[in-house]
Structure formats: structure tokens, C-alpha cells
Length: 117
Image 1 (tube, rainbow, N blue to C red):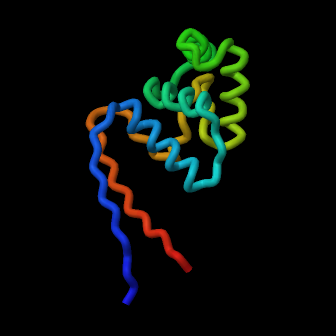
Image 2: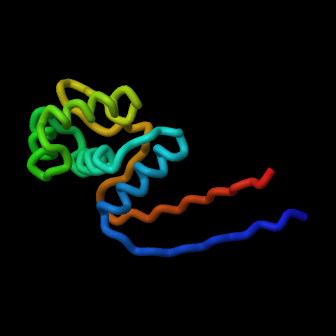
Image 3: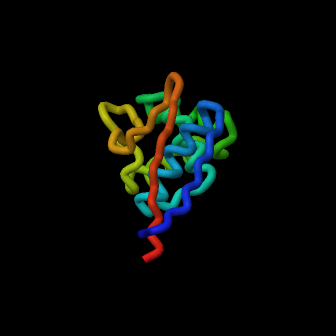
């Protein structure tokens, strides 16, 4: 019989943190490396849904996530190459394949088994 050590944690966090957690988990499970600034950028995009690239980069630079709109554009291109962002009709959005929930009350229930074999 296999012995399994179960860890059960319950925590209440802000909407922003639950969005970040989903993005980090997706990237971790798919071996995608992202920086803290990239994570913040993707989190803001999740909150905005589909938006224009120009307007989004302006908001991100105003919030100080990246120093300029061009830095944001570079980050968006990098995220597109990693298939985290898609562009559709001059709008950018998180790739729906990530299944990131970003509105309302969100309850995450991950069940992960780490095998020691």
C-alpha cells in the first residue's frame, strides 16, 4: 500500500493574486519561464480581457510595470512566442487554452500527486 502525504491549505486572497496564481501554475506545469514583470503584465491583461495593444502598453507603462510602451510591446511579443497571448482583430488577449478565470468569485481546486518514483 502506498502512503501519500496530503497537504490541505485553504486561503482567501485578492482577485489579482488568484489570477497570478493561475498564470504561474499554468507556466510551471508547461515549463514556461516568465519574469515578475511579465507575470504582472499578463495579470493586467487577464483583468482587461481583449484590448488594443497600444492602449494596453500605455496602461502598463503608466502603472510602472514596464518603463515604456516599447518595453511592454517587447514583452507582449515574447509572450506571443510562448503562446501565452494571442492577437485577434488588432486586439490582444490571454490565450484561452490557459483557461484563466479573472472575474467574480473564483475557487481553485487543484489536485496534484507528486510521485517519488
